[in-house]
Length: 351
Image (cartoon, rainbow, N blue to C red; front, side, top):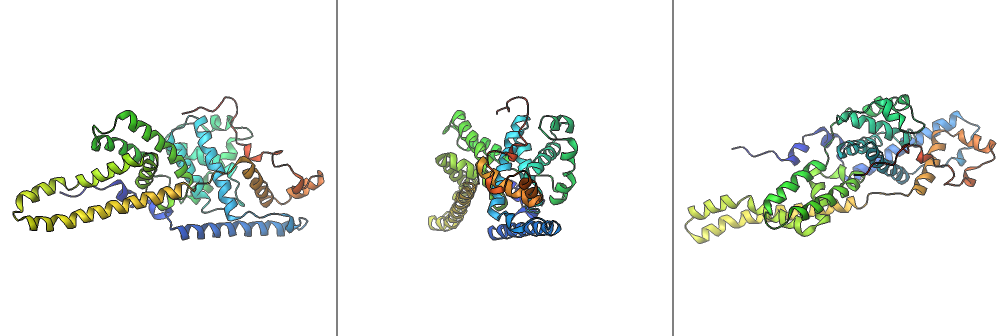
């Protein structure tokens, strides 16, 4: 009988794995390249506006780009809750936003505009219907045209790969499998708390670089291990041990000499133990990456946002001067541009 295809193996056949998986060095190199692309665009715009002093336009660094993208990725979570969108929609929207900025720089497209289109596109992709009219109506200073105008640009940047694999599905599968493997050793209530904690941790995972280095099941296991290491390791040890229980029973009956039995079993047991140790190391490393997910404050994002505004439109500097205000004299909290996507009307819904 042929072996069952695992979710890990299925994922490695996906376009997401082929197009959006990176080594750590490869990802950093790509981000540096995209940042340079943004800087080149700024230089081009400055050449077209010679009345602006280039030295007064602060460029955005690679790290600042990532902080601003992370800030707006977390805003997607808030907006998705406000629209009562399921976790799959918000996870897809975050994926769209972060992939878009592996092709484009914030000095080319401002995230506060892109995130709205990503969220609306993710809703369509995940079959969560909401009309563009009702979507834009509930967000201040937003029109259907402003959202739809970026849709094709985002699709092109995504290479039209709209199906996204998330850790939520394998986490759900682990929840039921742990119940079966650890039957009688853990209550459903206790396991439910671990599951809820892991789901919350996945939000950080989606904003971290773990999604580019690890498979969704590995990320799900990393989150489970972080919430309850004891239960997760017990589950994995039993799971790995169970895979050869039936085979070992047959071998014990067939092999007559005890020494020969030990020779047959020891290499197999060692192989299983090596696989287990390797998996534990992978999910431990995965959590280390998840823990580095950036969570910049609103004040930090506002300062970077100002730089982005001037990079996108250097002529704003002339306008500020005419109004008697310079970039150095502006209070970062005076003009909260990053709040322009705050939803209107009621308080955002909670889980």
